[in-house]
Length: 131
Picture 1 (cartoon, helix red, strand yellow):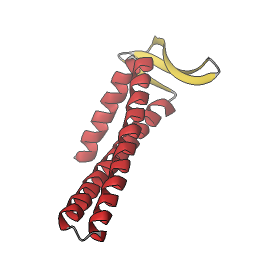
Picture 2 (tube, helix red, strand yellow):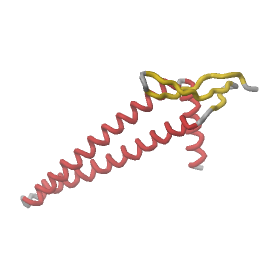
Picture 3 (spheres, one colour):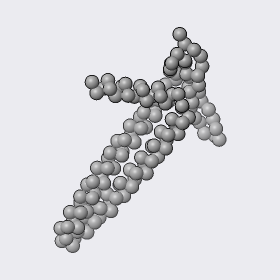
Picture 4 (cartoon, one colour):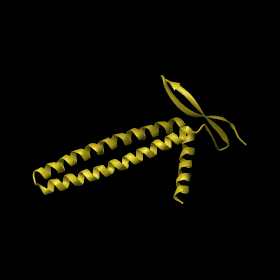
């Protein structure tokens, strides 16, 4: 049941994204970059909190140790959540652009390669009516 629901949601996301390929691509790329930044922030917080916990251990301060270890564990958990979320975004984007064509509302859309400022991009172009 979960696989069916995930499949329907993914198909819906891809279909909606196909209507606005350039906007969708930019939003997805921005989401991935934002996720990378927040992931790095949580990693750095985990390092700092871990150092704080270590300092508490060395000074025999149980409060400082507890706060540092708890902060490091929470930050590590958030880092892992962001890492998984970023992977899902990248997989969804890759699945979208590996398709050569698709049909939406009776129209055939084909993937085209576009070069802008020396960079390679893909876009979907409405080709013809099907059916």
